[in-house]
Length: 97
Figure (cartoon, rainbow, N blue to C red):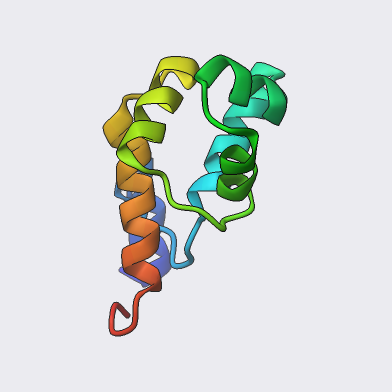
């Protein structure tokens, strides 16, 4: 069986991208799906706008406090947001390849 055939039989949960996705991109997708702006997220979540903007630009990490706020507003548990951040940071660190 070729590598392509094996990949096609994998479930979505088993597929891991070979590139890094900044957590801010996932946050942005949720905002778009909800029709919510960055300003609205900042207001509703009680997160400073500068922090929201920095996360969306990949310039800030998702802290435990921010993860709880995102969970409350975006409907995914805090550990989801923290894990995204951890995975992104881990994969970007030297020697992780």
